[in-house]
Image (cartoon, rainbow, N blue to C red; front, side):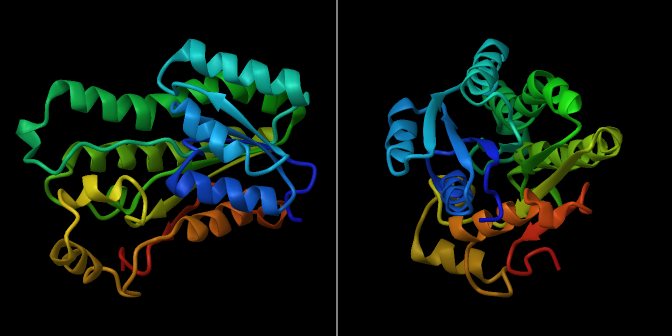
Length: 247
């Protein structure tokens, strides 16, 4: 029960890595808002546990983000933990062929959302002199692959933003860290590989020393530690949950 009496918002929490983080937070005693643009999926996930509540949110829209924060504060009175997990990618393609719409979508969801959530929530955390923010980045931001250029760049932005946030917010008692997973068994896996075939999986797995994809449970375990008081001396870290991919 490392997160007993803690309140948390997990964006993109209805499936994939986000769902793994939600499950672990609930198991550790937290109350969790399952925030997702997919209303039905958020409701289904939240229905699995009495201490979870669904919230429909577009993390790239300031009004939607503010409404979520206002609703959480009205429900709980305070917010201890924010996990910026929502993310998208473009399909593998030469950089000059990625459409402007795809580029804008990647940076809106992966980057602008972190700015919008910080703008809405950091004043509350500053007033309480406590809080933990966890950004979900990617090994793509540390060890880029060809043909995912703009996705790679967005995750590099997340890593830099994480360390900058950590330095600026440390005097206010707010910790900021990031997880850098390798591709996992999530709905985005096919998008990263271009096609989900045994041959493509084998090729991808050959680059991971431990020989498997990241699982939602792996992300949940790492997230629970970094957002708990056990990690009270850890801020600005970019934790690799990648089976050795970045070595």
